Image (cartoon, rainbow, N blue to C red; front, side, top):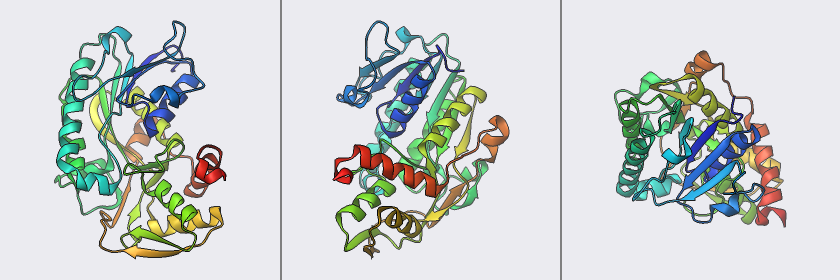
Length: 322
């Protein structure tokens, strides 16, 4: 399917983007990454970059000023992953900035995409955060209404979906649940819950602090499953509709912590910081719509995924290899 296809990925040096780009390259695609990370050449050291015969081209841009050159690459497919995103604390403390940046980026990217004559598919990376604050188990795409996202980040993704659907491009929006896996941010305000917990367990063998009660449930999907779902969605869905990419199963943060402690063979006590934000109490997403349309289904269990991520961290994150 992907051999010799021309695929443009915005935000391709981010966590999910790196996994997507590496997979596309392994399948023989020509890939152009446009991102705002000026150091992204260091993230693909095993691939020749920006050479005449290279299958990988990297382009740096400031999305809020200019989305980059799409037309000269003549893409068959565009994966739009670029966004202002981070952990829950970052999103709640920077709501107006995140909302403005995400809408501005998506509008600019869509304008460039409309100039691409051979475009067969456009994928917008949305989020489970578009769903109402009431949460729920195995949420379906129809449960988005009445709209009431938890934060302006969720609203920015919901508005992005509407912009994409009204663009008249062959498009799909994917509502991604909590993704984890290799190339995650382990340090800083953009770190998500699983790598953050791993680092806390490693550095604090006596006691670790956890946001909230730890009883909030989340649907976690391993990144290779997420990438496969994205590739299925962009191939088979072109009517601008939205689909969930998830596992359909919720796990408490306390359970995730216990599984990580067992893998890392370190068992600190947990201090629950009840004054910190924890978001909705429970939320898992149904993937039945995407499965019925494309046949896609997740394959990696939470236990296997955490083992794979820890093994990758030991090989690639200095703190874990000592």
